Length: 237
Ligand SMILES: [Zn+2]
Image 1 (cartoon, helix red, strand yellow):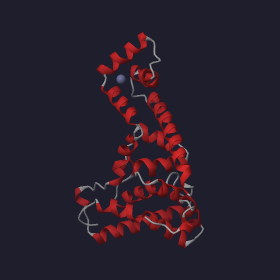
Image 2 (cartoon, helix red, strand yellow):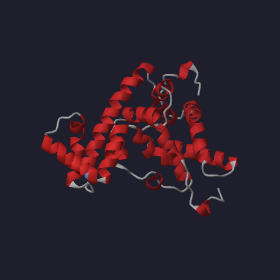
Image 3 (cartoon, helix red, strand yellow):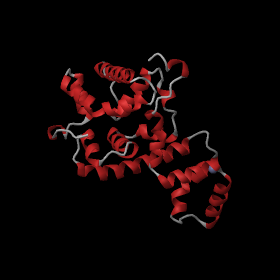
Image 4 (cartoon, helix red, strand yellow):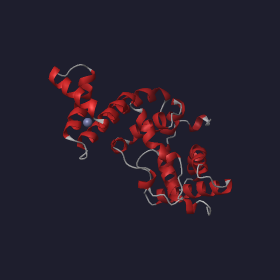
């Protein structure tokens, strides 16, 4: 979406602050930036165009209401808006987005890192647009993204190792995956690593995700882009 140049360096979080202070233009600007995505997601509910518009309007009002009582987004604006949209359809947060180790890791990152990962990796928007949402210069985006991917990867590995459902051997392997890839393990450890992978579906999946990192983040967030309504509520929205 093309934005007037004057708006190019105003971040979403700044607009949220202005909207809280009662600035209607700031609220409108948030609307302009995010309404198309909200409409697209609402339309996946197979409801009439009028219902899509009404649901999107209510989601935005809900966001404004939350901002006004200081319950504004702790992370990037758009996933927050999409969660509010799900709530409009009676889908609570946990149902909208099952928590994975990767999403837990994501939520622990600083807002700037979450925001660049959301737009650049999850939505794959162009660096110029990502820069606009963040109120940054475009040149900042690539290095910030690289740094944020590293942070996410490190946090994710910590989440995995601390996951109580993981067996000790799987946790052992997670901690050595980088070493194995770089050929740094002793022969005994490397053999143990390979033997375990051959027989463990979890670790096979883990290594595939690690190889394709950070694309898995996009997969984990996909449920936010589709509205799966319970059958009985689809008719009356
Ligand atoms: Zn394993």
